[in-house]
Length: 320
Ligand SMILES: Nc1ncnc2c1ncn2[C@@H]1O[C@H](COP(=O)(O)OP(=O)(O)OP(=O)(O)O)[C@@H](O)[C@H]1O
Ligand SMILES: [Mg+2]
Image (cartoon, rainbow, N blue to C red; front, top):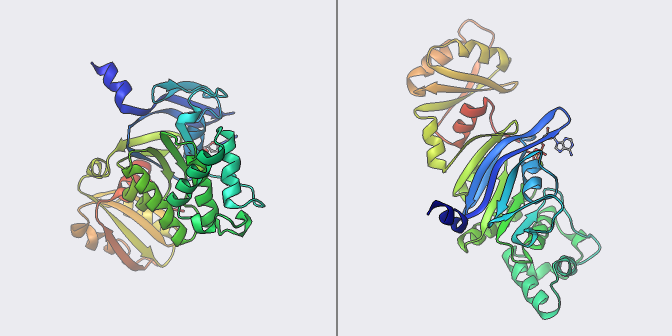
C-alpha cells in the first residue's frame, strides 16, 4: 500500500516548489522528501535559495507553485496549521538582549501556550540540549555570538516539534559553540527527531546528515547519501593548484588538456581541476605552465569527496 507507507514514513514532502522575486527565480521547481527520524542536509552557496525554500516550508511566505506537507499536514502561508509540528531556527537571531536566557525561553514558551511547571521543565530540557543551563540566568546580551545562536536553537525546540529546521546555525561563531551545536543536532537526530539542516559547510553536512541535497541557483542538483553523491563523480579527482598569478588564465589553459573535465579559478591564485585519474595527469597539468609567466607553487590532490561532487555539479567550489 504505497500511499499508507508514504503517510507513515515521511516527515516532510516538498513537491514542485517555486518562488520568484520579480525576475529573479529564487527557488526553481524543488522536490525532496525527508523520512521520519532522518537528518537531511540542504547544501548550497550564498543565494542558492535555501532560506527561501525554508520560508515556504514554514509557511512564512507564499509559494508561486508547489506543495509542502509536514507529517501529512498541508502547509499554507499564514495558516497556523502545522505550526506546532515545526521548530524553526532562523538564520537571523530572534532573541531579546535585555532578557536572561531563561526569560527569553519563558517568552517563547508562552507563544506556544507553555506555562508554569511544564514550561520550566521544558526550558531546563532545551537548555541542557544546547549546553546553556549554567548561563541561563545571565542577560543574553552578555552571551557570545555562539551562545546567542544556541539560545535561538533552544527557543525553536521548546514546543517539542517533530521536524526541526535549522538555517545555517553555525555561521560566524566560535569553535566551542559550533561543536556544541553540532553535538546537539546529532543528539536530536539520534533521539529520532526529523531535521532539515542547511549549511554551506561541507564538513558539517558530512558529519551530521543521513542524506543531503545539493542546491545551486534555485535548483536541487542532486540528492542522496554522501556515498551515493560521491559515486556520481566516479573516478574523477579534484586537483587544487596554487599558482603565482593569473589563476583565470591558468584555468583556461588547463581546460584544453585531454582528461581535464573542468578547471575553475577559485580566486586569483587557486585553480580547481576536475580530472580523470589525477596521478597520471599531474605531469601534463604542471607541464602546461612551462614557458609561461605562471608558476605552480602548490599541488593538492583530493580524494573523491562532496567538494568534488559540488564542483562537478555546479562548476564552483563551495566556500565562504
Ligand atoms: N525578500 C526577498 N526579496 C527579493 N529577493 C530575495 C528575497 N529573499 C531572497 N531573495 C533572492 O532570492 C535568492 C535566494 O536567496 P536565499 O536567501 O533563499 O538564498 P540562501 O541559499 O539562503 O543564501 P545564504 O546562504 O546567503 O543565506 C537570492 O538571489 C536573493 O537575493
Ligand atoms: Mg539563507
